[in-house]
Image (spheres, rainbow, N blue to C red):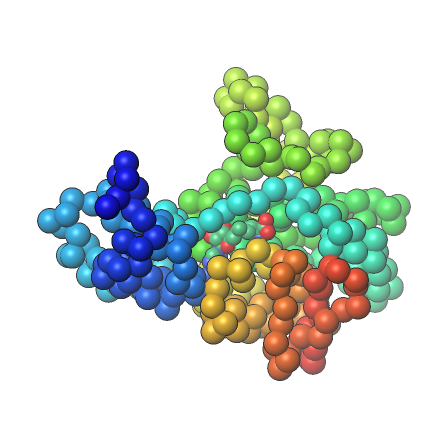
Length: 292
Ligand SMILES: C[S@@+](CC[C@H](N)C(=O)[O-])C[C@H]1O[C@@H](n2cnc3c(N)ncnc32)[C@H](O)[C@@H]1O
């Protein structure tokens, strides 16, 4: 029996409509069947009039993964937890080793361009974090940003969350997005004033470097190719093995040869993935093998 309108794990697991939508989600987005997802789906179903339920489930399952109604459903069941400078150990390797060496190699080859992809970026903090580190690395070389072409692309399956990321407004009630950010990076934000009291907006050069778009990692094509660095952190934990394999293949196609792939702390790639692990202590960093 459900208590206070909540669905128990067992009820969700036994509900045939939940099971159909779990399977549909797994096929179209890679999200694996688990208790959290079952409960979230059951929560969505509870909002629907019982008499319409079967027809609405049929309708959802029949829609392609790019359909706005299906995407609105995904948005209701996905987890978007993120914050600036998440996984500081890995970001230290990026800031102290990878970016300086990469910028030096590019400068000496006369190709001052840097392309970064934050895949599964949620509300954008990860994409803006890497852009801040890229700006730091260019400044540390004593160069101006004008000498470089820097693009950071943030992508996520959820349209609503990438729209929020593009707005670039953070703070307010709830978990603090700034909890790991250093004071010196506050220069990239401005107060929203009366528009959004207590919140801060990405400003200046940072907002120009970062672009967001909706993209499903189950798609064969990446949002673009030739990325130097891709981040896909805390996304594989929601995928089953087959979905992770599809996402890794898409990330591989998006990266240039020798490009870096930064994953979440518990993620590991299977042999044959086309990536080799970088010896970077506990930071989970791979490099794309082979030629572009
Ligand atoms: C927990 S957030 C991770 C945010 C950020 N990468 C970080 O580590 O802080 C996981 C994100 O993956 C997204 N996601 C889930 N399935 C996806 C898919 N098939 N393609 C693209 N993004 C997906 C979710 O919408 C969610 O915003």
